[in-house]
Image (cartoon, rainbow, N blue to C red; front, side, top):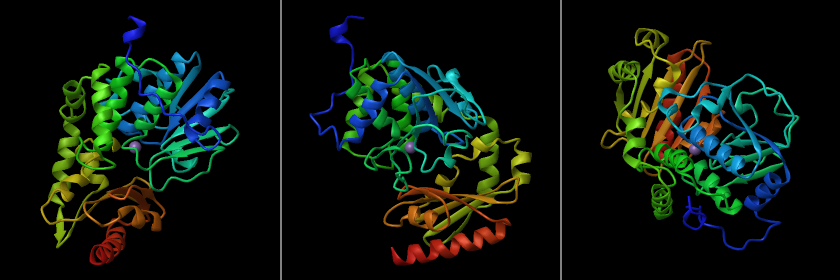
Length: 335
Ligand SMILES: [Mn+2]
């Protein structure tokens, strides 16, 4: 490739190095040799895509990067370039100059043992993001944490390869629900354009995510829709352990089911409840309009974005359902 025509992420404007978290991150990356890149347990498209892209950025910078998650990469994202580089582990071992945690609102969220002894860099775009690390960069205006990785690439001056662009495009595609929600702005589309120009294939990537769904997921959706209930501006649906077994479903098959409840006209808040093997209940909360599900999730020990959040409640399912509906009812009434 001719150097002059190589795609690059937009370079950042002149910035105050002391105050600027991006430049602080870059300084640590420039100063080190070996890095650990992690994201949250049960990784989603943003987690996987941004980990892979950051790994590529570091490699171009002449660094070594180990990519580790607590749970395996979901089937939908295994076709991303170099997805096989992400290793599943329960604990991290080895000597690293820093561990970069992508969209984890706490060290625990990574689900990995052994992170506490490392120099931690926390890069997040969630409203529930907390400055728990030695270095924190939390920007809620980013549509995906991949957008922040793109800015690292720009600041580092590395070449925006087609593989990197594909991973970053997927982070935006999935975190905005196919460009329909989240921190979506003209800037998001400008970024998507830059990534397509750099070689991301928007049709192919959308087909990998939205039209390559395992049959088990569609079966599970059927069971969930069978349990769909509505009360004025709220809708909810749930899955029992028995539903999971009958559909031969994996945990990742639950992703996105809540959106079907939210898609109903006139519904402003939706929740998907899932019975966990340990008896607890996992909740995915979504809203459109003014209802903040982040506030509700945080109150119940979880976190997330204004319109997309989650938390885990004590079981049984019926009790968790009553609890969340009471919270949602209050929030919808006051919104
Ligand atoms: Mn994200």
